[in-house]
Image (cartoon, rainbow, N blue to C red):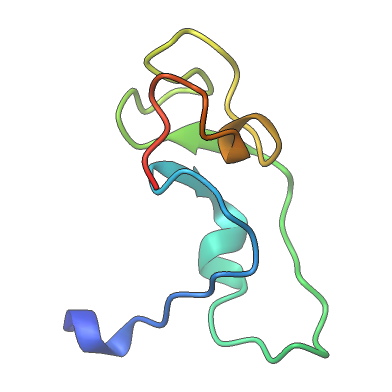
Length: 72
């Protein structure tokens, strides 16, 4: 698979290092389809549920650009 096969969905401004199973399950959904996911998030930098700033990773906290580890 090359990078051109991946479609970026920018519905929510989140840190680019925030990962979740939903990122894979929801790829290619149209706007009228239901978004799925289990709500579990992790950081690509730490590979844990905590970011480099030792705060929890989730959809809300990782949408805050004032967070020291946030990457637009």
